[in-house]
Length: 250
Ligand code: PGA
Image 1 (tube, rainbow, N blue to C red):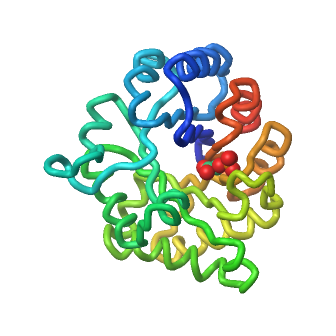
Image 2: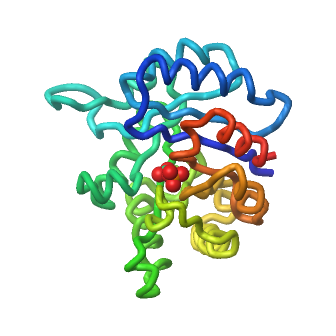
């Protein structure tokens, strides 16, 4: 049985006051009796504040990215060990905004995945196709290529200690959600592809869906056989909306 997960990706948003209010509201509203694992991923600079508020509670926190190096002359960067030091349990790697806006290659994302695990963090690996790729029927090819870069570097065994997120780029922040069937089809493809390498790992792997998930569409998406929760951008900045999504996780 895969434990559902709902992760909030705040992206580059939030003042200290906003982050504090949002974190408090989510912590108060989350139903600890539910099995869904809830995670908040604030911008780096807000992590200490969020960590202090969530300390000792049920909600986990994590980073949105990390550098592949542990320390040293990398001005402006943040490493996996630094995130661990602030109590992060997870870190997002390969978000489509990192890939598209900051030129992160499949190979670099694979190295980040490895660096995250090396630092004791659980990577949340994002994969997904652009609209042009979907229209050219390249969805499976693109997702397979993104996955292969990681499994070729770290081996299928390493995926046992990770989370995947399928995030079609055309659905991120656009209000255009993939239909539950469209999402399920890709989630199924991912699980089947990984099952060819290791059945047990594929069966136990959590695959989140991300891309314009809202309170109103979460339950149907999360009800699909291979969708184990969501990675939530815009809607994670509103406590009520995010909590509604968390409740839809089960
Ligand atoms: P969105 O973003 O929910 O605003 O579409 C999802 C994500 O980028 O993780």
